[in-house]
Structure formats: structure tokens, C-alpha cells
Length: 336
Image (cartoon, rainbow, N blue to C red; front, side, top):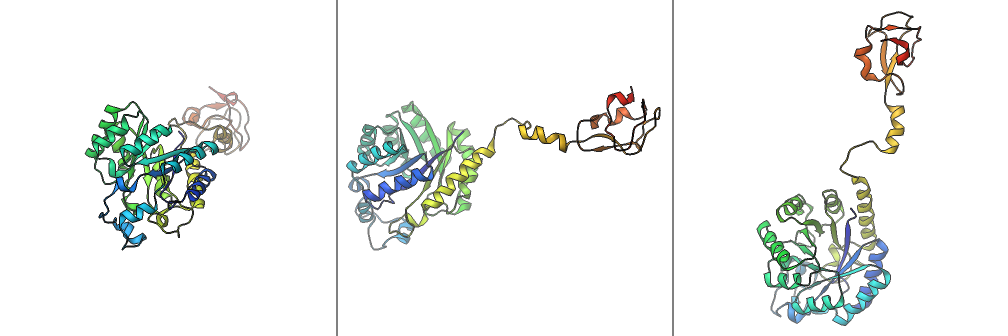
């Protein structure tokens, strides 16, 4: 199965439409299946008195409020309409995370195929019901949540939607430590909630994403930016375009390596087997009518002679003809 790779632009456009377009171009160039943004109106999302998250204090002006920070990162609905059309033009999927009922309605009317729900909204049952009723595919992040909360969220979505549901393991920190990735819980989520699973990555580097694909993630989401040195909360912990390209190349190579659940020789192994497998060979000259003993035979490459597994059966049998040293044995040489 091909892994669906989401290049998470988020707010790394810094509220600039031209930068958002460049992010789309770079995501397409890297080979991503989808580019994702965040659709919000700051006044509907956050109180003016809300403090910044700890990581935001480290990556932006600590004296600036979270409200003012997000206001500078906001794109208009008109901007998103343009970006959606631009994505269609260059053939990359457009996706965006909504934060209000109004955002959901806007994106749904835009004709998006999928909704991505942020970790912070996983426990918001009314919000989940509302987005589920669009009957669109939902990709749900699970940062800051335990299994019971994830189960409740998936049950709410299933009860209100006929659309596909994919649940992403996620650790809410920017960047997060690789030891906090907890990728093995993807299997727990898959079995407990009976859903497809994936991974939303905030770790520096690609190792966790590669491991997630090997463990069965069907979706990988990774933040990326045009330049890590740009001002803003998420740039420094995002991949640059070259790193995104490396990620996608690595995932596609891993997909090739995974193969199928059946174990059988490949076509090239069947060809190679002739030179690598052994058959019964004489290790001394044997005269006609002589009984074969362990002193007479050994195993040597290539295959093509009498199979090694005839070793016990051939002992004490007599030869029909003289056989020279280093001769592959065959049935016609032996009196059976």
C-alpha cells in the first residue's frame, strides 16, 4: 500500500499568500501527495489573554501574546479558495485543519475531500460531530490524549459519518523528542478502535517516520518550511524542502522493501539458487560396484546433481559405473 504523505505547511506561510504558493510548489516538487494548511479566524480561535505555549515562547517574541502571533499568521478564506484552485491546477491534494464550525462549512463548500482534525480538538465532542456529518474522510491527530479519549472520539465520528477515518499517533511538542514518539501504540490504536493508523511527526529528522511506515502507518504528516531561519513558531522544527524530498524518497524506498506477507523466493533468487545451493558430489574416485560410504561423498555447489537430502539414502548403495572425484552424483549412477 502506498503511504499517503502530507506536507504540513501549517502557518509557515507567515500570513503571506505568495509564500503559501511557494510552499505548494515545493511540496509538489518533493513528491508529497498533499499539502496541508490551518484555516482559522484568530478572533474565533483564541482569547486575547491566552498565554503562548511553552515552545512558542522559545521560538517567537515572548512578550507578544498568542493572539497577536496568530493574527499575523492568518490567511483569509479568499486566500484559501485560491490555494485550493492552485493545488488542483498543479495536481496536489489540498487539505486544511479547521478550528470552528464556520471553518468546517467553508472548507466543505470548497469541496475538500478530507478534514484534518488537530490534537487539541480530539476531546471536543460537538466539534467532532459537526465535522463528521460532512461525511468526508477524517484524519485525526491524537497528541495529549490517552486511549480511552481516542476510542471515544472515534466512536463519535463513526456514529455520525460514513466517511473514512484514519487516526495518527502524535506527540504535541515542537520539536518532540524521538523517545516520545511511542510508535508501538499505533498497533494498540488500530486494534482497539478498528481504524487505519498513521503518524504525525514533530521529531527532527526522518527516523521516526521511516519506522512508522515499517510498522504499518498509512499516512505520514511532516511539517515543512521554505527556510528554518524565518520568524514564526514552527519554522525551526520543520523540514526544509530538501529534507522533505529525502523523507519522501526514503518512504517510497521502504514501501518497496516491505513486499507482501507471503514468503517465497523472488525471480532472481530462483536464478541465483543454482549457484548457491549444493548437491551430492564425490570427494574421491569410486569404482564400479563399490559401496558408497561417508568417505566417498560430500556437499558442494552448484545444485543440479542429486539433492543433498538423499545423503542418508545413498549410503551403502553400490555404484553402476566408475565415478571420478568431484563428480555430481545422479540417479543413473546408483543401484537403487
